[in-house]
Amino acid sequence: MSPNKTNEEQKISVADFVKNAPAKLDLEVLASENGLQQKLIVSSRIQKLRLALAGFSHYIHAGRIQIVGQSEISYLAQLGSELRIKALNNLYLDKISCILITKNLKLPPKFKTIAEEKKLPVLRITQVSSKTINIVSNHLLKVLAPQTTLYSFLMGIYGLGVLILGDSGIGKSECALGLIARGHRLISDDTIISKRIGYCLEISCAIWDLMRQKYWLKSIR
Image (cartoon, rainbow, N blue to C red; front, top):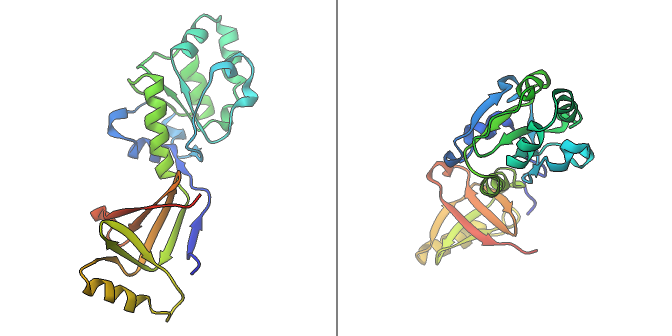
C-alpha cells in the first residue's frame, strides 16, 4: 500500500522555531523580529561560524542555524570597526536562517545594526555552545523529520506498535478485529502519521495526536 502523502523536505520558519523550541532554551530575540517569519530552517544540522568570520564563508550551508559562542564573539571584539563590519558582511547573510548567541554573551558593536538591515534574526540563550548544539539538533531532528501519511490500522500488541497495511478489501479490518478479540489494543483505524527519526520510525495517530499516543517501530536501514 503506497502512502497518501510524503514530505521529503520539511521546513519551518524561525518564528515557529522560537515558538516551539524546548522551554529550557529560554530563547530571547535580540534583533530582526521582522525576519522571524521570512527566514526558513531546512536542516537539523547546525553550524558554528568560526572560520567563516575570517573569510571562509563558502563553508556556510543555506537554511541552517549558525551558533556564535565565546570564540566568535572574542574574535569580533578584537577587530577594528571597519574590519568587524567587513567580516559580518562577508558571511552570505542571506543564506543563514538565524544566528544563535550562547552563554548570554553581548553582541559586538554593529552586529545588531547589520542583522536588522539584512532582516537576519539574532537569538540568545544562556547555555554553552556544546549543550545548545545537542538540544537544538535533537529538537530539529524531530520537527524536520521526513513524514508520511498512511491510511491503515495501528495496533498495540504486547507494548509494540504494529501497522496493518494492504490494498483495499484484502482483509485489514478482519485482521484487526481478530486481534482486538484476543485482547490487543486498537490505536487507530484511519490516518496514521509516520516520521523517520534517525534509524527509527515514530508512528502516531493523527486523530488522537493530542493524546500523545505514540508507538515506536524499529526501522530497516
